[in-house]
Image (cartoon, rainbow over all chains, first blue to last red; front, side):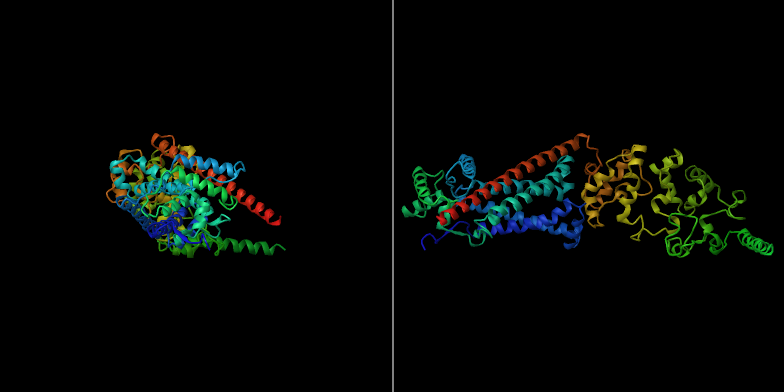
Length: 259
Length: 313
């Protein structure tokens, strides 16, 4: 059926980075949260599942290393793509994202007939990405301070340890809530998506899905195909004709399916 | 009719005489059974001796670290009659002096309280230089701890290797908290109110609660018998080395990191601000995200309903 051909959205590197990231994340949460809430009775049970706090500490630090590896991998991979001139800054936030947020909320409230036309990544996907970026920065930074407190105070004031503890503990809570409420809603629990968005395994979505969810990216793809070149650099911001074309198809397509 | 009370009276006199006869004999070196004639616990199954030191449970005593001792190892000087202070003999002068100080605190049994010194003299020397020792022996602070306040009831005294001991490594914070976490004592003597809360919130305290025995407890930094004022240079002097036992290369600067610091001090204020920042950030972000989820769900429900209606038409 037309529209069912697959389009690559996440190549194997991104998928692997995601798997490394979320497995280490889950282990870090499961070993860290019982320590944050040590006073709660269940925490001790949790800790015993890991074989006691000492073992949990080792597991936590091992998972942290895996997470750091996933970050280094990601950044190095992006660097490689830049070097090869195939990097496209699709994740960079722009003014359009703010406008999209505004338009999307208008759509949610019934003030607009259809959602805004999203590019390769929606504003909430960009939010997820940058939230993790900020989170990793805070967590790895404060985590290393807590891992090496003696070395830290050699060149930083002592209260840095206190701040690191607060930051590590509180940012962990924020990250955990954001992932398990927000990210899980968007990629698992959302009625249109349940039980999950399979792209993290398959790496692909269908052309139909691309057209519905990321119309500007779909138009860019069509333009690229029409020009008969696979080497057309990604259009950013989208060229006016792509926007116009997408708007046309957006109106033509059923807005009630096109979310 | 008069015969029975007369016989009862006669028996009573004989029994009393016998008891006096045995108890009245020199207690020095006497075996514990003599004392147990009166002091044996009436309830063998319960835990006597814990609350009422008058009653001794012979089996529990035998299992205690000092179970092999005779009563007069600690209860010295009972040479004649049951407990006639005037007849007390053979008690060391220095022991009597310490007992005199303790008398102010405990009243009865001061010799027995002081008698730990007989064997543990070096520890007593450390203790008498400590904040606790100075408070009790020099300033006469009645609530300041002496041996038994930290080590537990004397007749069931356990080795610190026993998990039930108040001095078992992981039980030490609870033992210290019986005063340093007691609001009455904290207020009365103006102790640092943050000692227990800051420890409980620390990684040391948290891991301890979670079952680790590989963390610092009170005595790891403060010592046990020679607890000095933590504001004194004497305390700071060796502190870095104590941290260094676990945190290799710990500097004196590092040692100040864990200071049970009250929240009013500047450095902690920075931490409080960090806490506030994250509270606002977390609250704001999660509120925004949940709102977005709610709006998205509502619109999805609306679209589905509309689609159904269309199909019906």
